[in-house]
Length: 251
Image (cartoon, rainbow, N blue to C red):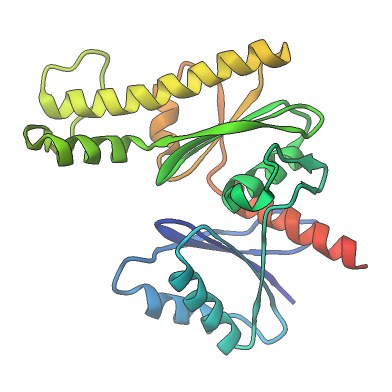
């Protein structure tokens, strides 16, 4: 029997197989706004066996989440939903109301704690830019949410049509408007991460390790003057930790 992990984000659905005691398998990803999303989901479901377990983490809208859950249930593999908890698998979150913390950020904390002793600074460069700090004891110290570089550019273009330039290459000092927009948006994101790292080091007395995930992670890493560990499947890693913890709690 295989356990399937599903991470339904704001842009894509990521899916991977997982066996307890092993790492997350090869990740498949599909953009859920694309016309071929439903056929691709059904094609993947054709390979899911009767008795396979499915775990779903979603930050997508309720309608899309329900549609994916219904597709799984109709195939005979109803998904268990991951939800933020005040404490789980050695991690305690900072939010007084756990439901207000995005499940993707929650699962990233579980994944980081399972990777080894912190402290950790978790950065996700996805549809939004998020930063979360967790100390060596597994205590979440809180986090930040900001626009992604892409959304910064979209906001400028919407407000100022003269800045509606696509593309561009980031550099320290650009000599073209498209390049300047690429440089400024990426630099703003990098500056927030580096500032958070400095503040975290001051708060904890030791520099945290930086885990960088999300579709824009590699691009952001190139702009950071920090040592980072790229973790593109961090939410799925955390979902595996969550599923293992649930199985242990039930036994």
